[in-house]
Image (cartoon, rainbow, N blue to C red; front, top):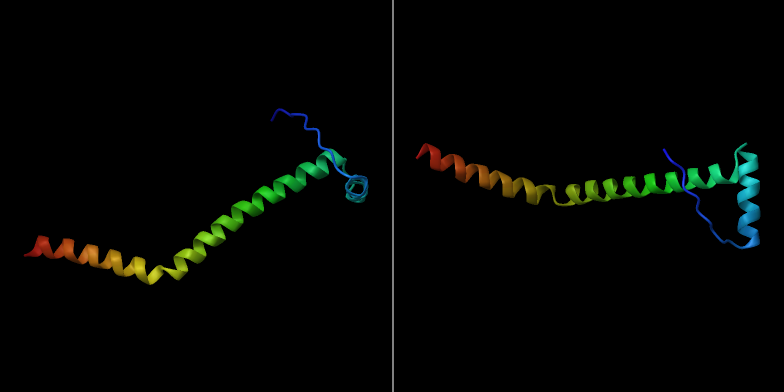
Length: 80
């Protein structure tokens, strides 16, 4: 994948923390920041899936009832 340069301004404490954490992990600051963004993007995706699953659990009975009624009325017409 092609790389794009991104310039970011942060305060000295944040820059120091980024350098220290990158060094502690044996990676460049660029790689460290890239990994943080990827993790954050992945967490957002997981959060969406978790929220959707929670929604389905909350409304499972409503969906089940709706689709059971729809199937029941459709099958009754075919057998009448």
